[in-house]
Length: 270
Image (cartoon, rainbow, N blue to C red; front, side, top):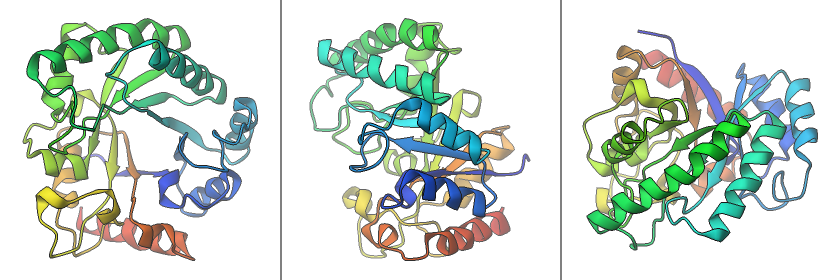
């Protein structure tokens, strides 16, 4: 089994400026980070040029594994095409290896025919854009019942059908995988793993939402350790990135200490 390679998503500590976030990664002995385009007052939204982000990452000896994310990617239209072009250019220019692609999650576009057609239309349009920039598209199905792309098996089938394995890979998100109830894990098609834990004993699986997502600890209900063991045993050797959304995590005064504890817990269990 390959050893675990931890990474940090800026959602671990969204109040940290990019430089402080990069420094926190280095303090944890982590060399891979994900930056986001949904954090107000931070790069990318604050207008920081991609070249400045690239230089900052190089100074800290970090690889930017992804920009997170192009939202509603499978609702392809002129507006989406413009957003995609801007994010792909930014990814290329800041040295990010990939762009995370998040599907529509508002209950629309869920009918089987629409789902398949919308997914293929978006992937077909994105493929030449990503290839020209040398950026990978990371498709992230969301396990919520209302999501227009809930299963990794559907994304995998579309990627295979388009002969696009060199352009698109999957995100295995332990929270969404658990919610979707899917058993297949597609290690050979996985480009990134997102981890977060749910420890609230009272919330039902159907009611689990982003604010429940904490750092992984001994009370985790999602079987993060089991999911990681299965992926690593099947040959996955890519990054495993912390992506907690809980306000309690975002409010931590010492995020590095909490992350260190979670890393030690996971590594110890594996």
